[in-house]
Length: 328
Image (cartoon, helix red, strand yellow):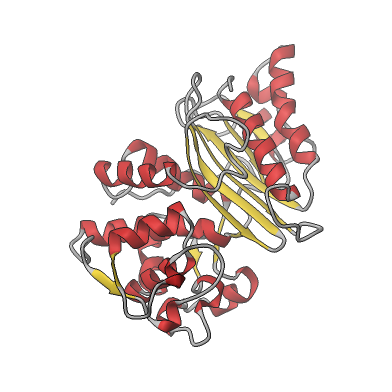
């Protein structure tokens, strides 16, 4: 399995940047822009009014967002990218289910598991939140393939807990680390995993769990994972295609893809004062754009699609496609 570790980050802290170059060491000017405190946008896109207007769009949307925004977007064809706190750790909520899915595909690929193996629903796996498996009778056995589909398509928390009980959080984290994702970890079962959760679904990273809950990552690492899927390097080309196909069927579209029918493969996540979305938007022109958008510390715990975090993600995803792909 190929490592997803990338080069030394060129976007950090509170600096936002957009560039059209391939992965190269920054120029003197680039280093000065990236270590400053102002928004460094137009010089990296190129001269001209059109470039300046395009560069300003994500910055304007980001500045209007409530809470603390962490974001990273990358055009998977041209390498153009945008980042805001792109390498800062973030609570994942249900977006951690994408790395969990990748680890399960790797286990199956190596013969450590089978898609047809049936996993029993234990009473301790049953939990609230999204999903339908919690409505089934204890003891019912479901194929691993079905559990992975439900974990992503309807963000089923009980299905996620069953997967963690089968493989353990630590084994999944070891697999994620093999990909070169050092900051991405599943820390515990969904919503605590019921009244008597198994320790198999809880990682050894107890200190991180106290801060980040179910999982931790950075926007840049999530995009690396998506880029590997897109290029067919995640586990294998067939596995990469299968994972993207599952993500295309995700039912929650309150963030990325909220207002149009542009094809996308996504995974949404939410907590009381947090909204996240990660995915690839397949723009009609200009190349696909992968993004990880995370809004934490929201001022109000509003439910539903009009949550300010969801609106921020929807607006910023559109601005990123317009800027990085030049179309919508």
